[in-house]
Length: 168
Image 1: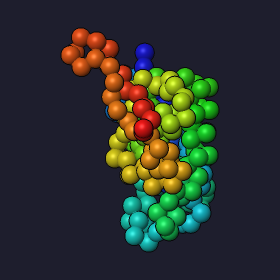
Image 2 (image 1 turned 45 degrees about the vertical axis):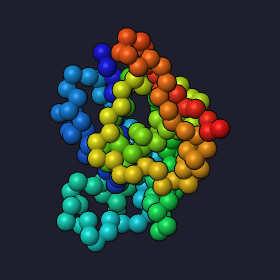
Image 3 (image 1 turned 90 degrees about the vertical axis):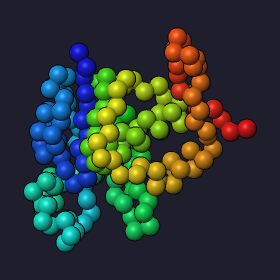
């Protein structure tokens, strides 16, 4: 059976996002991980009409994978990667599914694993409505030093793999 670890979106929590994933993933075992950070600021005025889909900032039920700083970079993504990696190693899910910021965190996990030479243990990844995950300068710097190229068979008869091939 597929065991999926699900990641909520920005300013949400496991309780708020679980109905979205349980409808999507009815045939698999589902677990939820809450982001390790809480927002430093209340919900913006522009998002107040949508308050019901976000955790309550005042009660500490609003969680984020990172804070987006004024310059567009991410603060806290490294700690979130470490927390996610520890949870994946402990619970051994076969799938990782993320919504919104959790979808971007799913992509960050896969990219960081590839760049750090860590074999991801998940065999499936689902990213639903992720924002762009590549504004984090340390991740961008690593990506600029590597080139992602497919390798392996191409005729449909052999096993195909994707590897990271260093720039030459």
